[in-house]
Picture 1: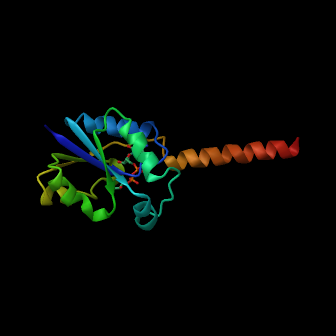
Picture 2: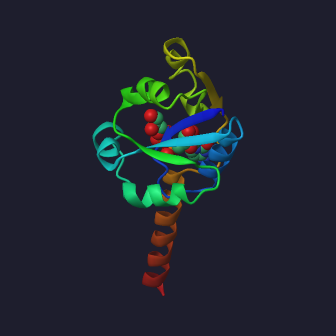
Picture 3: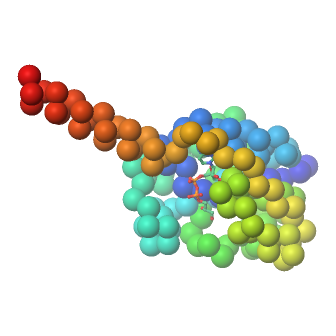
Length: 143
Ligand code: C2G
């Protein structure tokens, strides 16, 4: 059984995340997602997520491509995760290209960077929604 792992926050789950998870799963037979905890997001990624860890975990576990969700508590847990779960392939979106090459030196896992889905991001969703709200408020004021 080929085991794959990937890491992320996966806040406000969208089709860019799904594209990544599908391709990651297609690289093996079993996909583990290490999901950034709320504390890790706040303290180490400076991210305040819209959904809590439990809600983001619930969403990921509902995806057919995902076999197991584990917590990501720290940047430096990847090598031990890969050894513990006997991972064959480590996958990240290509916005991380080069950042995790050390994994192929410190473990037997292959490192694969997959192309991001370009036009969508959680940040973009939030910005678009804010812009729409501002436009609606402005229209209601001038009517
Ligand atoms: N992603 C993608 N296309 C998008 C948005 C995200 O392919 N339009 C990918 C990212 O490249 C990443 C995964 O989806 O591989 C999760 O994205 P984030 O939740 O933004 O994760 P990130 O903040 O990059 O955290 O230790 C690694 C970190 O936890 C990664």
